[in-house]
Length: 365
Ligand SMILES: *Cc1c(COP(=O)(O)O)cnc(C)c1O
Image (tube, rainbow, N blue to C red; front, side, top):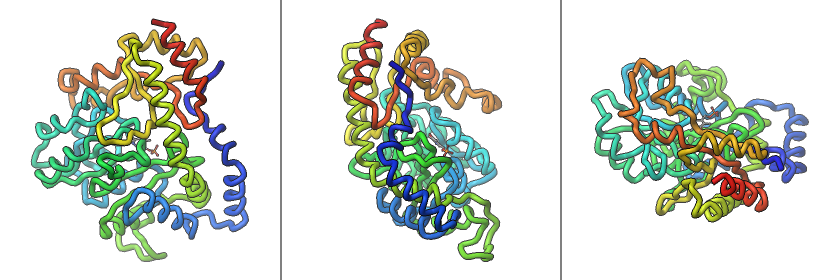
């Protein structure tokens, strides 16, 4: 048996006719950038998340950068980010000229630990970027309380959490604004790079839209300088087609996650916990083991693909060496980077595949 980490082919085949027709229509129209299909996707996605505005852009990293710029964040500012995320979260902060300030993660849920945020705030702190890591919502009620108390902006990094919610409110509508990625392997994935920004604030939406399109809203109306970060029409139509299936695919991911957790109950690995009152959308199913490397090698030898998200926590990456971050400052992130292991996770993962994977794990121990 070979079980891939994600199976984009299985998903494509399940909606092939619809996707092929949508793509053929774009080729027929030869309108490749902008136009009604992009606008339609923006409206559909805004309505899916429950925000007034959605601005599509080229990728998820750009969506963080552009929102930071649109909020006026730049040189001299400090932005609070979690110690565990994909590098885009902190990289985007540096790209706009600000400094990422790392905060350790909650031991139970792996998202930024609100209890540890206040100690990191200075007069330069302008914003917090919570990341809904692996599809689990960060503790937004606590984060919003801290942000309000200290007059900080909140930009939610929702790249791994399309459709996740906490206390009945979708991620992406808690903060001032939110960024999404539609990288192919994400819960809603394009067939190339794609991203989007959402917000309820009209002025912020307008500024972000200008920045993403050379400072213009209308052709040649360059009120400011911006950049080129547009979503192309092919990706927009693919995303609109796939958005209709997102709830169904999310339900299948959640079902698979529950199966994993049931079957791994009474094993020596630690399974993910779901926050109370939250919908975790399981972009990744991440277990922990003190014998992670041995387990990983064993699963690979049995044909099971795995991943590590992420092998080095952000504060310890060579690119942040100048911060002199030490293990003592980020004990949870430091410990977990050696224990975490992501198992195959996608909607099409079959019952017998989950059983094979969990049986294999039981066999090792
Ligand atoms: C994927 C990802 C991004 C960036 O998205 P791209 O579209 O690859 O630029 C940002 N943040 C997190 C947490 C991600 O997982």
